[in-house]
Length: 216
Image (cartoon, rainbow, N blue to C red; front, top):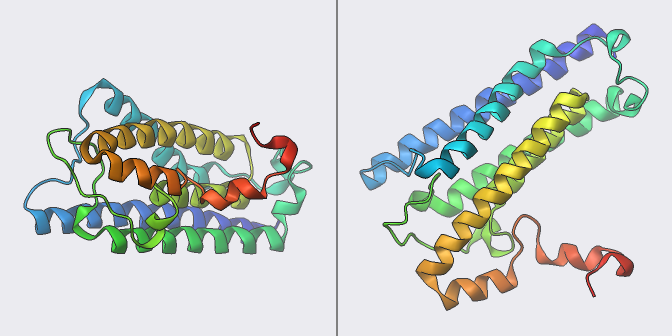
């Protein structure tokens, strides 16, 4: 990987972080203007504060990674990830980044003014089941994971993988908390929705697994 290629990878990762989280800020302002109140931006309770801390570390790491990335000759990760350092790895990373953000915009369009960040247990909330939500209950989190996977491909090292893992832990905890609230609010209609969708992957993904890996 030449210095020019490293510059492009750094620029894509830094640009994606600024565009994505700038887009979240714009989306929050847009929804606030439509509904006349905050879309649950403020964390409620210790669990959400800890989750926000985890996401802050992910965002900070995402932005800092381009500044920490080193040329190939200095990186101890060169041999294990040699394929990712070639042109094919860069192309794959860029396309995954674009796909992840395009999917996020699709989710914003599907949710419209019902988009929220935190859970407000004082309000029932609206069950959105169109667009990507027809098959996946938390597609925004899925597309975030896709973009972080692209970061790990573009700047392969231990830190990107650590950020991906930390984000996955936060996502699973947050998703389950949201589902508990929606189940309490919508009852059987949400239970039926749970049965026909996947949390982060489409339900048909399970059918692709080898038979010996499936639960008995």
